[in-house]
Length: 165
Image (cartoon, rainbow, N blue to C red):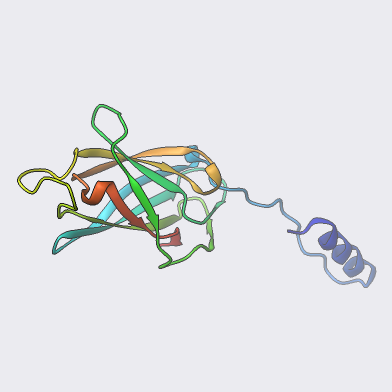
């Protein structure tokens, strides 16, 4: 962010005898290796479930998340289950800075009621054991346990952008 303009401002301040602000390198997007994820805060509403995917910065440096990223449901054997990741704007994308130890969240909402063409006398689809989470900007993937069974409506999950927790 400082770039050429920032350097020009720093030089001008020094010439005027004013203190020069410390210039630090920009923090980059969070890498998957810098985060540990979990899903909590399950709210079992009538026919739907809501929870929060939380990611905590376990690295020694700050990093950023900006946007939604993507996710896919994963079966216990590691195969990919049907998933429809629908981005909703509450909250919408904003830059989230994660200092070491800080946490960001992402809201998840899905149906447990069978959708069109799904069986009504048993699971609506294959049970999932995990979410494969791709961070915004494609900065890596993380697998997070998902112990909530089947996601109906073809694996449709509504997701918010990341937000500070």
